[in-house]
Length: 544
Ligand code: SF4
Image (cartoon, rainbow, N blue to C red):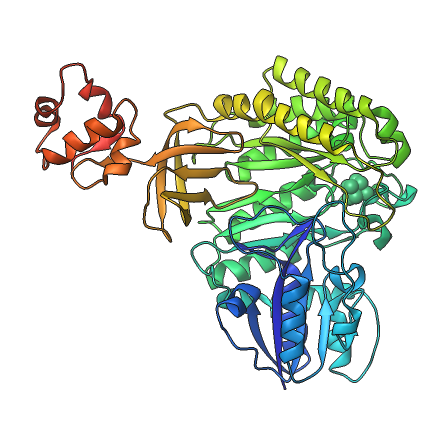
């Protein structure tokens, strides 16, 4: 039998599968189908949008974007799209991913839309285990066993070769463990992760094996992203303490194992980290941070689960870290990780997020969050990102948020934190390596480096998309930077690109074009007005 595996993308707090990412869940599902002796047709929702057919005898759709973000490309599947797909499909439809249980998300603060009437089966636990059982004529809601996890992670790797971003830009999200050590107390009020129960950890050797297999197939970008806290991976305290002591040896074994089997890896990043773990065990956390900066690649982000600097909200929602613990974690990561790396970005920085819509929230919450960020700025600490979002009501009803105050807060963060932070992080003249140009908007071209929370890069002129360039920074926005492809060829660059060079402007750009070609910089200097500093241009350009 041929099964179509439709990747409608997942975007969960501890797992990302929106292009260029491919989530482990679709790979496991492909592995389970093959392991059950059937064929698997892999399609992404973007391929379907572009007209690709869905040919299987049965359809397994995977989606789960409960916290939908803003995407440069590759929007997760919408309810309406799923409706159209299921209406046209002739055969049983199974839905997997967190949408099977919670519905399809459509924005922060709004309840996901239920889809049970569109499907024959909803795999509310692991879709891979569900489809495997179904293909053996058994209906069961269950989690995969450890043996299946190991088997399907390998059996499903081939599916990456059918991802539209393969091989140059696809980024494989890798799972290290599932569940949250804070399940012991029920965990943060808004989060689904503790509902899994006692966390299940994958052996380092299994993770290395999966990474090596993906590497052999041609994948060069990886993120150890599927876990509630990277620093807690392999801790012996999981199951007995909600703030486990980091196990430095197992993290060393994991990272060195990956580098040994995947020597020319281009990106190796991590994702989440619990600030309470870092602050409670600063010695072990410092060692883990050194391992990350040594064995992972630059531009890496430890996304700290902070949510609020307001103690009242923290207590009301049993959140994981105090504001003081988060500040300690930010300082520690900055101390070790903030130096510039090989791709122009710092090696490792913390990221933080603020969550609104939690019980206990008041006007004081905004004040406390501002005060926290003031301290970060005063100490000249770096943050890779400040994410502000509203809760999606999955475990409980959201509290009412003062939307006008939230808007003001966002604007304040943009002006007081985001732009000054970017200016500090990547000053004008910094060269960002290997920016992949992805889309055009008007006369502008947008791209990103491949990796975790990449900076949005804008070239203020039309440029060819679908390839990598180095970019030299000319300006900073709130959440993006502007730059030019580096080095810019004076003899072939467009009027728009030349205009974007520092101190050039449209008139001089036109003058440059009129006098082309130039054999050397002195010829160019002769063509320009006397006030223009041609020598300064050689830092940005070349003559091809
Ligand atoms: S620490 Fe809180 S937010 Fe993070 S995974 Fe655990 S319960 Fe969820």
